[in-house]
Image (tube, rainbow, N blue to C red; front, side, top):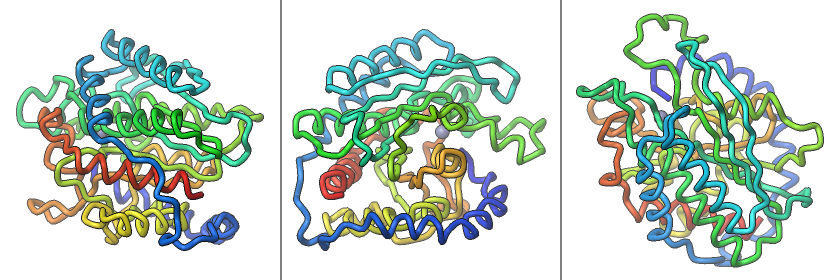
Length: 338
Ligand SMILES: [Zn+2]
């Protein structure tokens, strides 16, 4: 993702406004009866454990599609979900990148209570960017993606470990999407057509949306995690999330504040983004919100994804356990109270 894509979404926002009534009616029907103050405290999210899962992924090296590191990490993720009692499948396919390169695709899908109609989707991307196009050095080298990729997956693996031990009553789908971060580089001047450039991101989730099984038990809503481990993370209320999944967005942000994580989950509203949730909302029609580090940069005065975004600084050094705790504990508490 990159900030220059914001304008592309004006038309989508208009679309969202048109569809907003339908979604909010749907969401009202799911409203929990209890006020937050009376919710169950739920299980304890272990940030040390989530950090280890992030370090393990980083230990494989950059997880760029079509590389051995990527294969090895994918194998490990499948095993972890299976070990946590998830019914795990892989969606294998092929997608074409911005540069016409054909890339193998591997979406990893785990389910708890697979036959329950009352289900939630949690997702993150597990691939990492093949270049460091926002760095000043070695821009053609892949990034480690400790935050951009591994952090979301690390938090979800820790949630998977806990729901395995502390039986969750609802159904849960965890999806690790592939090929999210292979979008056209910002230095490539060939991509003057913003619309065509835009859809070069999130190829794994797009593939998943376009190939949904007719029998698929659609989750009632979804939560996407992207860049949720940075030391100075700020999670705003992003516009696509607000429009499609405003009810859950507001509830989760309120819960985060109640749990003491208001410094991360800010009430500020951010412009719409292209991320996996954009396609899940638009194509799969599952109301899905994005918890993503996106804040006004002190350098440019524009919304941005943090100083380490798509650079070689995105390594384990910038992963901050209190941020992982804020996100993981909020999600876990929400899961046990809906
Ligand atoms: Zn990225």
